[in-house]
Image 1 (tube, rainbow over the protein chains, first blue to last red):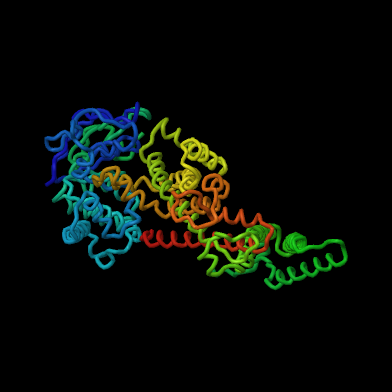
Image 2: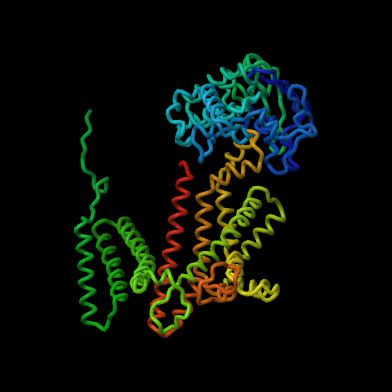
Length: 258
Length: 348
């Protein structure tokens, strides 16, 4: 079941530095939302606040409210590991576990969360690899190391690993920036398929990609270095790329930024 | 229009010394050195090698500079110097091995491994080092059992959890501990455990002293290995909703395992040859002591030290064989460790 995300007046800090300020967003279930903006504008930080991966950095904290359906992700008594099980994440660089085989990589999330039983794991691995469009390429070499795959295959392996734990939301932090155009296309196709089951939020520097895959697009920017990043506007992708409401968005999209 | 390839002076083709010329040069240099050694006062094998090497370096550089030009000459000079330095570094290692092998095989027999020195004087033939081998294995084994878990936990704390003052302090004291002379570790256990608490000499006391020596080596090497584990992997695991401790145990430690094992083996090899702290804590014994908690015990370095101090050839032979045994034990442990880590690593 995909879930809805709503942030209300969300600020994120690294120590004393305010990285993003006053982000108000509603992300509907089973949609793809793309976040675009210049480097350092806080879009990755915002993505990481969604599943509390932000907290992994020492001194990082968040104020404001973040609702997953009607539950406050930062509410008292909410455990970060539980949040991350519900909201999966795929990173910029493919990062399969080097000591594990392809099979073990996909099963890692389940195993490390205490799921046992060969049959259950076999089914989950097959389902996840099929879901990540990787099954046909690797089904004959599941015991081989995951690091032996090509970059694009590794990234799909990481997606399989993320969806194996059956999250409700999938966050992707520039998932294609280390990949060639063909692998990028494979992942974009995959995103469109995964939309039926998950709510997807993707950070990308590639505006064509945002235009191709997303339903809604949000534009982040900063006024100057040292200032916090702000969400300038978020709207239907069609509208953002043809008739944005803000001049700054239009400047960025048409390449007249700065 | 078709272009015509014409050889250009100073183009891609360059004059090069043929292999045969280089080999001939080496032979000529050896001949010249031999001549030099027969007509002058120069003598000795080491001197011959040094003179021949220097002559070869000089002659080759001059020849190469004339024929091939300065860049190639410098290349040849440095290549030859690097190879010579490698051989020089290898020489003591190989000679120690050969010399120990040569002298140690004399008494490398059944008796040596089966019997102890009980009622065997320095002048008596026979006798063995069973008690010393047992002692070394028990003391180093116990020290490893104590220092590896402790050292790993310290390293995990410093790298994965430690922040600010406490971690910096721990790191500082580990660095200080690395510099402790081994005899000081022995004196510490002697004054604290044996004289202070009154436990008496034992193999266990020796294990305590060796633990003091092993701990910093293990902490430092494990720390470096844990730092090498990419942060991406930790994040990937955390993002799957895996708790932090499980991420460390199941993802970070296995990834760093081969390096950690290498560090442990270095520490083991280092303390296995320690004599002074063992002398102060286990004291040494001539007969077999089966447990490390039962009074004075011997060990291989102690056995070597005591037997080699004797003027009798029979005792000195025993010392050589004990030295050979020590080298073999360390080698076997190293090979075992490599095998284990190779099997556990799937590959990258």
